[in-house]
Image 1 (cartoon, rainbow, N blue to C red):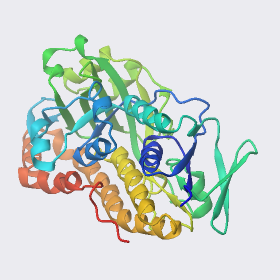
Image 2 (tube, rainbow, N blue to C red):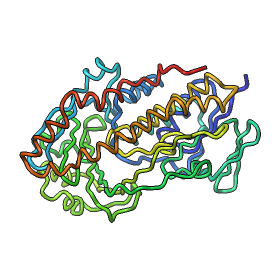
Image 3 (cartoon, rainbow, N blue to C red):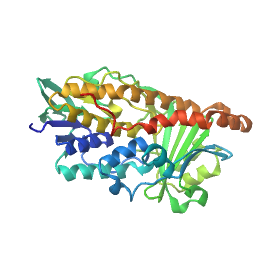
Image 4 (tube, rainbow, N blue to C red):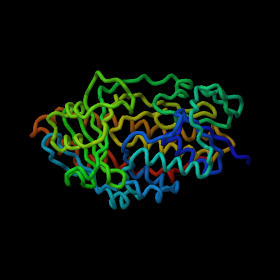
Length: 400
């Protein structure tokens, strides 16, 4: 069989995961990326066992070891007093219970490792400065139109072009944007400038009325990743690269524990963006064209699963194409059928966690303790997270 050419719009984490998995399975791949160059963006992401097992399956474990952190546990802490409760163990416990580690990594580091692995198999696989504006299908051939007038053809097209997906807009009526009324701050703090309590190898959810903060170590425990979310109905910019000031960030967390302010004081330039919600698409596929990641199921970041969903998508779409390489439209419908229910459940679960993290019961010390001990009972935590971590995209049966 002649190698099928699979085109991918978008060289983010999901697009590169799909590209790598397809190249490893003998497909020809070309990835179109609108950015003129691929450079480090974003900050930290958490890769639970359901994501790390995919990256290990793709042969990336040794390349990732120098840059990931394996936190010992996750905890929840009160916004003002700092009182803490352990959510669950990680480290060896994650490997024992779920068969794979729980990693914390800089998004740019993971992206670089994926890009290097793709280029090792096909040096010219990624074309930068190439924005896919649309496509047309004639028979079994898909032709994409690029913004600069160029065209390219292949046997299939995967839209991994993110939350503002142009391909989704052409294929379906895009889900209406719903601003979540939240603004997120992110920044990185040098670990050696923080007090010992903040240097512990744990992931922490600071929860409070009207906001919450997530911190965890990345890049070999040399940086502390900070993401702070506050209720703000006026901020509507979705850009990840809009800089604010430390003074503005600190003002949004006035009255919060001094450890939060210590992180803000020493971190690099803080960036801010508005969080938006979109309903997940019930259908992702038209013929030999399908969608992946945020293009079809954009997820609020309250289960730490957004990037992992794109990683799972990338492997499973490749496995489905491997199973039915001569019937791409059927392979894409199989992929869609395997993924829509799970990803929609994660979108809903992330929205539920937003309300859990920001409850007004957290405003007063007595009700706050009662609330945490009720909402984060061990059995409730297991029910909330175990089904996420147990999922194995590497062994999921693929219908023939």
